[in-house]
Picture 1 (cartoon, one colour):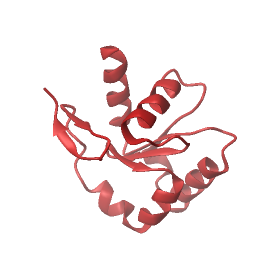
Picture 2 (cartoon, one colour):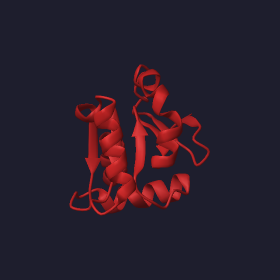
Picture 3 (cartoon, helix red, strand yellow):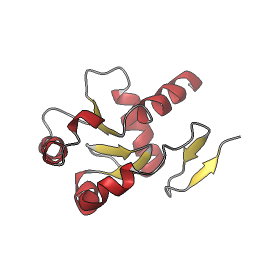
Length: 118
């Protein structure tokens, strides 16, 4: 369990933008198109159904953030939400990308608040 949590945290912090996606999801395709349009596709990592952590990431996002659908988008370690949430902040993404990555000793709560882990 601890190894899985560490792998999830490491994955979420591995790129500026990390998204859990399905190939068959039209919102996931729209997210990729938006990132392409914004010139950010190379700064993104997509975790698809074939990836080892796909099920674990989906489960963690559902448990921690009550988000049950794909895509599930993280920017610099911060959970954004799905594609609809991404659309709402699309014009501010460059500002979010200027924030430092979350420290690996921090965790996100259901409310999205950062607390130091013990």
